[in-house]
Length: 530
Image (cartoon, rainbow, N blue to C red; front, side):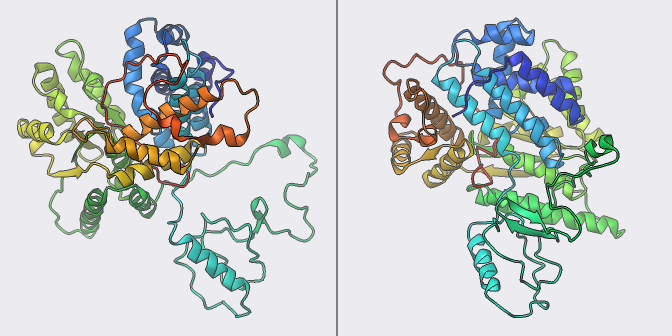
């Protein structure tokens, strides 16, 4: 259970600003992310907008609700700036993620907190921290590799001729294995030479004449000894790593197949260009169609990294916007506002959700015209992905010739099956350090069975909302227990998933619309847990 922070939101935002500065991010952009995330966590708390406005310097109540609208997507997925740090493997990603988690905890104190805000804070904080967890080795592979290593422990063969180059064992827990007697050429793949398993993970081998790892060392220059070693900047994720993350997502079989096809086509086009061969210009911009909560933003984020790994983009970051972030209040200002958003996405992916909302008026058309111009001007270092419901998106693209000629690939995101939604719920709970028993799963399946499946069904967002509500009821159940056990803090029960308010539970104030597409490492987790 996520305890409210002892910091105020203002303090947490200052810490976030410092973390952004250390990560070489634009500090004001980081603060805007934090403000939006805090508003999304606290929006169901009565009078939260007053405390939020006082601590952020935005007294207009509408600013709070606008920020909450922008931040809801980050209750289920890493923020845009955190996603960029993780994609680039920045050593500052962990500090920035923890600062965002602290913002979530501080947001619980705004207004009059209720169980829903507790659930929002727990899931949102977990979403930021889970972005740091790489996808694990597939479950079907891990036992086989571990069994192979145990067999090697019992073998006296000379293994110098054994080719282990295709194995990556970096994600395995090898603490229980004794590998010291193995004669392996170059060591185990994925494990740094000179390391051996130990109780705390892989430990450096002791070297004769040198103190053991972690032992205190003396220095003639104490100041020099205290200087931390400069860590080299990690390399961005490789194409294979990003495709593995894609393949690890729940469901989305047709989507994965199409992304793999796109990768193959673009890779060959790049190789032909390097070889001096003529190659047709292949449009990289994409249309994603599907109902809310089907993983469109998650896949868009991976596409940015994949295109970067292919050498088609310089940065690979994802900037997600909707109409409100592109259209201004007056004609002429919209073009400027849209151009500024595109400039922030240069080198990466601009993801326009509910893009069809730009149709039907002169303000939206001005934004579309600007997007078409910017797509042409930045065609070598920008990818535009537009998303929304299938039928409105088809009409929107067809009615804009400038867009129709630039979007040749449409990828359909199907609704999740009940089985897939159960897996998503379980992984969300694991990411937030909660345990679900069979009763919880059965209650969730019963709710699914009676829930209509229309265009407004939230898919993974539906599962997340139920989990947030359950976490809130769990917190309310424990309100009179001074020192709950770890098991009590982790365990959700079937009654937590009952719809409706618990006895004596304060009513929940909510300004959240019924449907909105969500992104997600937590919407579609890629690791166990997380």
